[in-house]
Amino acid sequence: MKLVCSQAELSASLQLVSRAVASRPTHPVLANVLLTADAGTGRLSLTGFDLSLGIQTSLAAAVEASGAITLPAKMFGEIVSRLSADSPITLSSDEGSEQVDLTSSSGTYQMRGMPAEDFPELPLVQSGEPIRLDPEVLVKGLRATLFASSSDEAKQILTGVHLGLDGQGLECAATDGHRLAVLKLNHALPEQGLPEAAAGSTVDVTVPARSLRELERLLSARQSSEPVSLFCDRGQVVFLWSDQVLTSRSLDGTYPNYRQLIPDSFSRQLQVDRRALIAALERVAVLADQHNNVVKIVSDPLAGQLLISADAQDVGSGSESLAAVVSGEAIQIAFNVRYLIDGLKAISADQVELHCNAPTTPVILVPVGEPGFTYLVMPVQIRS
Image (cartoon, one colour):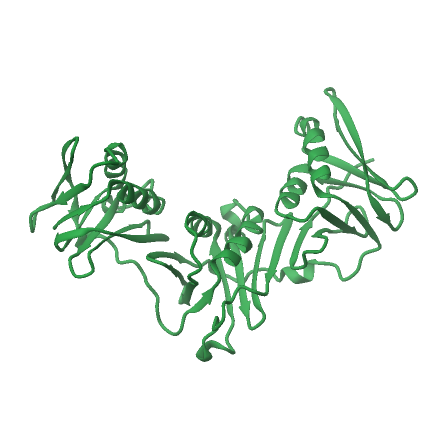
């Protein structure tokens, strides 16, 4: 194998695929990144794979001799990132040899790798017609829901985001059992999004949040209107975009029927300025953090305001009032302040509505004038 490529492109590509390299590998080769040079296409492909998440990207290179080898991801990445961006990098290794010579204007390095044959094959499910998604819309869906997924490995299915796709569009949903974020995206499919062969089909898959965070990072890092191709098959999900591939296992099990958690009607409604509410909650949260994270919200229909308060025993207490449009009778309701702030930050609208029935039933936050997003949060029961 022999090739010359740009330091900046190689360093950026290595950073990207290294996110899929196992930190505690079950086999030594999983700590490596796979390099495949192809003289025919004039490209160098890089792959990281920890048996659950796989990321592959490629960059232009002057390839003199094709070949493949794996190199320790951490060491290779650190060397390349410290080399001069002004000088191209030459990578070469003799056939059958496990040593790679890396040459730049600043010096020469030798690294011992492992044979490419030892590297597990990336499960690139590409059977059937792909479903094409608009990258910008997909990013929006991930940002609006990822934060609500669970980090508790005991609730395996809740550690992912559920992607549901039908003729109407894409729905992303995530819940950790205390809150639920759902975003319905009607414009997720570009023109010819669902191929004829798949026109009547649906996608119903739960993908680990870790994999989708990497996908969101991938799509956000580069602006391109090229659609993302999605393949789902036998416990594996593959996203293809530009010259990048992200492959992930899907989570086993049936995702909870979250739609039935959302009440059909509400007796009380509070409309308030979103930024003002976040700011008030963040100030009161300083005290709430001292003691169980709970804030109380009391609505006053006559004064047209909300009273937000926190009481940290033996430390202090604080309260703020906020102008609001209050419909329905007065209510006192308590929340984990962090859950409330997370949900409000996932909304971009200026005004937000809180819909509720009683102090112990689910509360819904919806942006005013931006249909599609629903954030459900369970109140905290207060012992009077």
